[in-house]
Length: 299
Image 1 (spheres, one colour):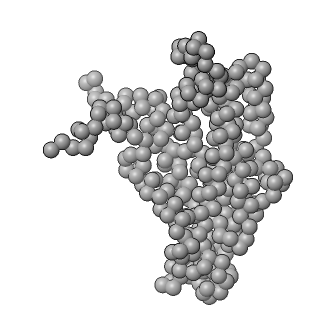
Image 2 (tube, one colour):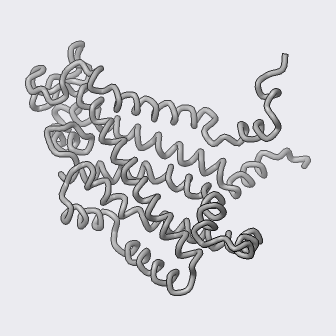
Image 3 (cartoon, rainbow, N blue to C red):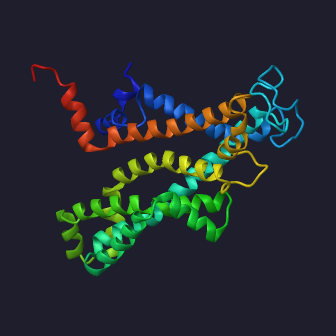
C-alpha cells in the first residue's frame, strides 16, 4: 500500500522535505514553544494557587510537595507565578515583532521600490534609529508612553524596525532587477500591486527568518525592561520582575531566582533554535553549504 508521501505529488514531497521545522532540534524547539503557549492559555486554570495570593505558604519556603518551586518573600507560590508569567513573555515578543515586521517591511519595500529621494529619506531615518542603542531607544519611548506590557512591547518593536527595514530594502533592490518586474510595469500594473503581488512574496523567506530570530531578542529585551521596572505592573507575575525582586535572596534562597530564570532562558533558547532551523532551511546559501558538506568524497 503506498505511503502518504508516495500519494502526494512530487511538489508536495519537496515541500515536506524542505519544511523548516523538522529534525530533532526543531522538534524540541517547537515542543517547548507549544508548552509555553499551553501554559499561557491555560495557566490561570491549572495553577495550584492564585499567582498573587500572599501567604499561600511560609515565606521563602524551599521546594516541597505542597510548593514544587517553593515560595517567594511574600509567601506566594513560585510554580503558579512561573506558569502565569508565560503569558506576558509570549505576548511581549509577539506584539513587538509583529509591529516591527509590519512597519519595517513597509519602509524597506517602499524605499527599495521607489528609489531616489524616497530611498534616501527613508534610509536616513532607519540609519538614525540604528545609531541610537536599542535599549536606550526603548526606554525613551517608554518615558513618553508610560510603562506596561503593551507600551514596553511597542517600544521594543520600534527599536527592531531598522532590522526589518534593512532586510526588506536589500531584498527589494535585488528583486527589482528581475524581468517580471519590468513585465508587470509594461502591463500597466501600479506600484502597490507590484509590491504586494511580486515583491513581498519573493522576499518572504528572509523576513520569516528575521521574524523568528527577533522573537528571542524581543523577549530578552522585554525581560530586561521588566527587570528595570518598565514592564508589567506589580503584583502581576513576570520573569524579569520576579528575578529583579528576588535577586537579594540569590545566596540564601536561590530557588526564588533560579526557577523564573530557567523558565526565561528556556523560552529564549527555544526561539533561538527555531530561528536557526528556519535560517538553515530557508536561506539558499545555508542550503548550499549543507549540501556541500554532506556530499560524498567521490562526488
